[in-house]
Image 1 (spheres, rainbow, N blue to C red):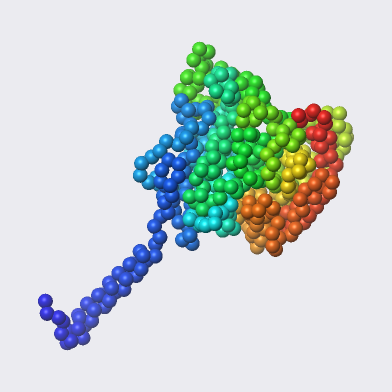
Image 2 (image 1 turned 90 degrees about the horizontal axis):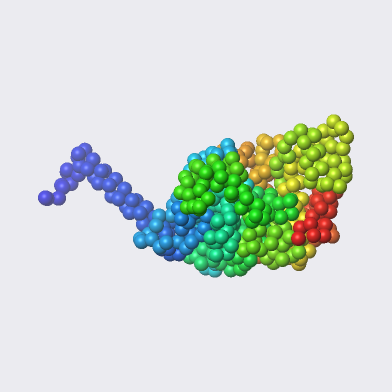
Length: 537
């Protein structure tokens, strides 16, 4: 075909062809440039095989979701310690989180319950530079929910985009909950080579820590610098892990938020969880000569229903293996793992339920011979007295319910400090705006830097909230890096000691101040009970 003449190219038709050709050339070049700029999805090799994650918008950080750290605990593996991952062929897609652990609906967790599965032993890894050298400190998150509900990766509150920008690798795990994670039975105990049952959720957390030890270097993380942190039941589990010899060497620092080992001075005994397990088996009409096979054949829904009716426990038990002694006693005598600890909670957590008379009965049960002093402190000493409200701590129900979270945690941190371990204590007072006061889980948006306008902990966040969140994230990640939360530009946070009892207060006005002797005489009453000779040992 002969070339176009100058006359044709200058004609209207020729000019149109030139314009189309030019646009095609420009579009093609732009597409080529765009394609060249897109980085390939990151691929890592972990226990089991290769996984393909997703780069985050900065092109350097990445997330790998739904990574299996153990075999699915289903069928014959229901109520067994987690087993090693089965290898897979090819490259496994790792762009979606695994399902939450099987759980009943409780209102607040309905979306998680609808998506929940027994096949739940997965974790997410968020990394600021998945091929980083030198390796970055690692933070492993254990979600709350009373050890019966909640989620890790499926909860948008735990999106790691903001936290990893501070130079840490974040791991968010799932673990078995409720009847699947904490169910004991005499036949399970007899079946176990360790003669133990009921701590499967804690064993899952230990398996996740072992996975981190073996694999986190593939994502730019340092297996020699791992911080465990958790909230509510996750905080209780953090302390249980500190009391367990099975997790020794798998983590190096710990943060507990709004949760302490039980005020009853001990975890449940294995005998107690076995009795609860017998009730569940009775509810399900399990044959006495083939109980385990029958229970392992029951559906997820059948077990959740039986658990709701019989109550099979929702926390660690002293089984002689995972927990060789009551964990409160381990802390009271300084036998827990010697790692730096941050521990604290919110000014108001959850109110104690009931009428003023119910509160008085609860005080008498908790404090025994010290009840007259406690009733006076809570403003419940006189007949018909409904107590007064404190501007920070709320009314008597708020104070009593929250003190059952706060004071044991405060004292367990005190024990840890007395045993010679670096310890920092705090209190969080800030209410998510426009809420009138703080509450259980109000701190979570600030810790993760996810100040959302929609969702479970949403609010009308202001610049003061963003500044407070940045401060808390700096403290938490400094601690993960060095074992000390302090750093440049931050108000000094003194170590806790039993004499001055100094702690850091994140105030309701979003400022940070150092205070002393948290809860004063209320704390002293709890100390008197918990520190009695033999009471926690």
